[in-house]
Length: 351
Ligand SMILES: *Cc1c(COP(=O)(O)O)cnc(C)c1O
Image 1: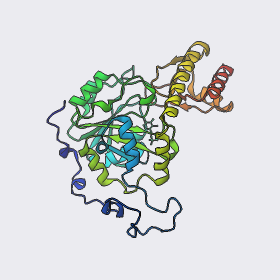
Image 2 (image 1 turned 45 degrees about the horizontal axis):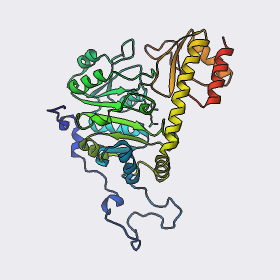
Image 3 (image 1 turned 90 degrees about the horizontal axis):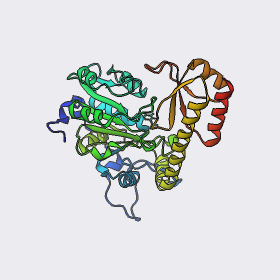
Image 4 (image 1 turned 180 degrees about the horizontal axis):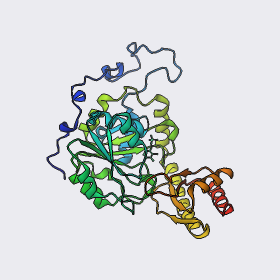
């Protein structure tokens, strides 16, 4: 349990004062019956499936996620991808040109980009050589203007999960908010931090429908946090941030959890097979890092050369050689069986 935590001191002054926009759908939300007519939002009344504004609070999607994740609806916020969710977090808590955040490279690039967009200093504390958070250095780097700490676990691009002990220590000792990005959690054997939400009022968990749920094209990310934090994010989000078609697609996908779980199982099994194959049979691959995600990070003799050779053969991977501690590393997403076979054939062909 974390006690003596006061969220108020972390909120930007203008956000505390803010009077949010009130949409037509905010102002009338009593029960609706078939006889009611809606002349309140200047919509086009001719029905075509999307002539009405979408539900600004995505109630049906949230009902489903609430049941799947076992988290009350009041603790959930949805955004146009997790990128939007993360941006909302910056804008509630980080005062431009004054506050700072901590990120742990090599990690997901969007944290740093969002910091730049919002004119917030990004203090980088490198992961240790085994890609774990350097707890001491992180706590030493934080000052009274450090609002957010981003922990990506499983981490992109390294693939590993952070130690539970380090995360717990940071949740207890870091004075700002800890954002755990669990974009890849469904591919991992590690448990989600969702069940610790009520223990830590400074915890925000970000997830997404882009990876395991297989609907990157609809742009839907989620975040789970105390209702105080969720209320603040709701206060500043664009009123109709998740469009109607995306909500419908999400609902349909969440109805087919068997399909989702089956795909996850296939990807995890392919990841394991791919790892063995790359370790045994391609001589310029020096290391295949352990992965809890749907991708593998590999170290080769010359990443840029191998990257270009693969492109020639029609295989596009991600060259991560310029990331700190990732010299000569390539990040490879796990594909379907045929794609993975082509990848292996191509890797062997360029020996
Ligand atoms: C892919 C990814 C996301 C997903 O972002 P969306 O905007 O939801 O598509 C979030 N975090 C990490 C670390 C990722 O790799």
